[in-house]
Image (tube, rainbow, N blue to C red; front, side, top):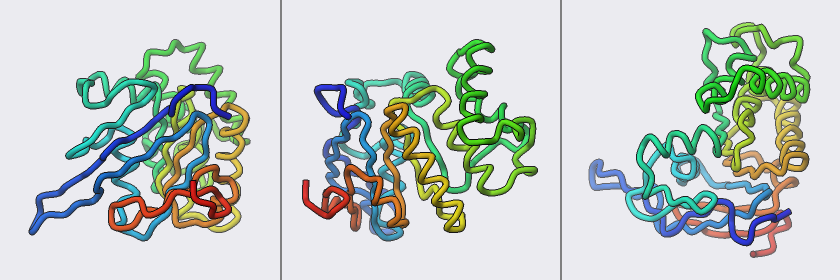
Length: 236
């Protein structure tokens, strides 16, 4: 599975402090290393810091203290513009509420990160078609989000996250608003791309069904990593 000598993404001594009221540590001294091609599931109760950790790993939020390193690049040394370009090319994000642009069709939503990253039209057409075929939505490519079901919207969101073939895909409660059948479908898609394209997935979820796909399970409680194990519960 691993093709690099070190982790593809890691974070070291990550803390996030919010100075509200008496102050709140959303994360405290988090250490995590993720090998290339790994399928990581982060589990924990609501408010435990899962979303904050994903946002910091994705470069959406900056930590109060600590460092994130992606493919050897330290986030703290990147300008906001350089970090934004890194997000567009090396990080894909799937959100619980899809976050599709309502004025864009399915294929336009999927192609948007490629367009922002400077891909030409031919490359965008080839990749978006390939992804829509993979999720069986080619016949819905010209539909707007309002014309798609919840499961279809989530598949479009996944395709958008994968469009630039990012090094790491981060997903925050990706099945939180779906029924069990749609949830299984989304899990299967993640597993498919993880295996076939060697995509590294880091998924924050309450859904224990993801555990059957996990190489690494991280349990986070009150902003701290309480346990790191394989899918069978063996500590690693």
